[in-house]
Length: 168
Image (tube, rainbow, N blue to C red; front, side, top):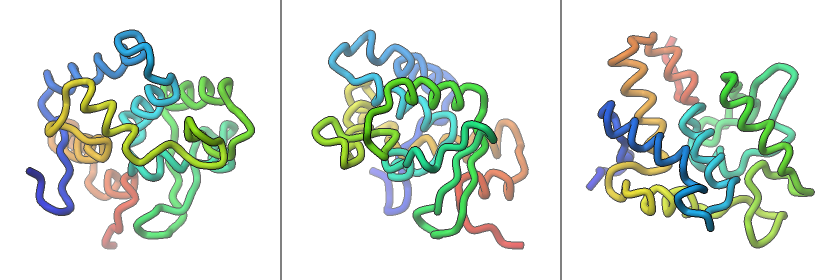
């Protein structure tokens, strides 16, 4: 059981490969799953923002021309810019094709005036067999661990990407 502030996250290479493989097959293996839900999980894996920031992402925060997202980070309330990889950009372009009148990139299935439910991503990860192993927030911990320990990215850069406060 994770302690307060910790979120279950897959950091083992083989388990991560399994998680990503299952994510990329989500709507094929679970046809009732909405494509937007699959895309939300995929985007989480690429940009590792907080699940609430993914779910509540507004179209006005998406800058296709500059290939970035721009919004106030939920924990710090500071402006946060998230550069988009080619893959993340392509996911957002696919979502743009599905766009409705909702201001949300991931609207609620019930009403377009609200965003995707808090439990949606967690429930899907459970359905994929990752209950107790990986949460929607876990993509952040996975990225933090692997970027630091395996790829040896500078810690301050990783912390900025995660929208954490960084000491000078």
